[in-house]
Length: 214
Image (spheres, rainbow, N blue to C red):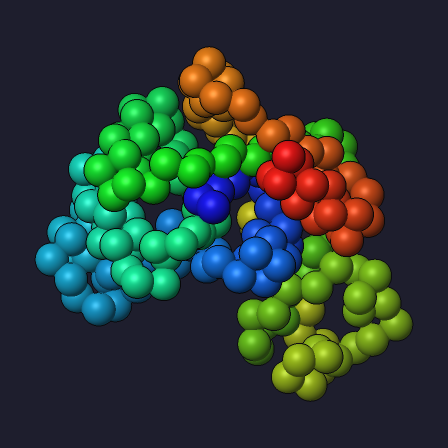
């Protein structure tokens, strides 16, 4: 099963991707991770992407699609995967459709995890990171604690700039502007599974699995 996963920052997409990957025994492919990996491995496309990123510019679609093509052709992805972070535009969605068809990966499912803006802002503004090991926690997880559960560093918690309300609102605005047309594109061509991201994590996972099997 080839799953394309959508979700705004803070919607729970990363958590659900890990659970689905484990339950379905298929890899979770984060486009951010594979881009960084291509750069670290110094592949031809990775080096091209690095030159562009070093200029502060966005990596163009043809390079991203090329990097994704190289990844999807790996043996571990042939029987299925969860693709997270791509496509972000309708043009990318069309390119991805062509690529999947070219690779014979036709059992595609599109899943969108939705959560209201208030809940997302509440979740993200309550996150804290450890200055030492970079591990991220919710305020509930570190309540009454002055040391990091992961590395033991004391008084190391701080709020990242990405988790401040004004930045979150801007990120959500960008996400909604760019992603809605992509979901509209998929809705015109196939069924999109919309799943509410509010509730118990295990129940949301079970509901997604039931929809996928259905």
